[in-house]
Length: 389
Image (cartoon, one colour):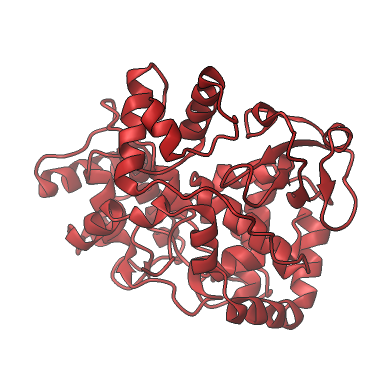
């Protein structure tokens, strides 16, 4: 699988159909309804007819949407799959090549270069693979599909706005299966809100201009709440007698309070910031302190394993050492994770969709059950926990 669209596309993972948003039925009738709504918003009939003239339902888009099993992988496996020495080397080359652009982003939006380099790498391999799905077909197909119509229907009208301003070609604009466009994969509405002409040519060209794409990504992160000159993730060593129930994203304390409990940075110093102790694979695996900027990642992407990998990779691109892999307990299989989620739901926990993915809700439920059962409450599900449940 190419990792082309897992930023905004994974914002989708929680969805169920929203009854108030029209979806389903005859595709042609659905398109006609879109056209009527577009004209009610003030778009001319001729413009609307040209924009929707060649739109087609795309079964490959639906297939891609349903095929996201890779996010069942645990952090260590997932990060090894996405982070290669070649990506690190290329990232450092790009950092030098666009040094002035990254300096401008850091001054203007407060976003550190490693953060954008990591997104650029994971989304499109630094622009090399931007996706070949017809963007309009994908957006209309996903708006018609009743899983997440509330997300995609507005994107169709945003694409229409881009078309009318000369920045979208319904027949030729391509990108990821979920409708994202360009080197850092942004949805049409985000392009309208955050698109920046970074190279000064008078256009916002996210597919062909790295300065445009990077500046736009920086503005978007700033818009989502990124805090300037603050870290996002820091690897730490943890004492074996720690109260593991204090770990996880649902708990925070000042990093200096973590230090008083024996948590030590593997490099550098601990800042005077609120932090959560993140144990992606439990108390025996890698450990990180996650600062407020780490949470901004979830405004752009809802996958825990992707967010943590992207945040970690950003630190590597800025010189951090490879994480200490430790010796974590074996991960549950996808089927075992689904069994676990069903058992957690039966006990009244909200784990979201039973999908075999260890996300934030499942982790929180696991930790509560570990506490109840007297197990180390590090939010890492094991066969022992599964059997006890």
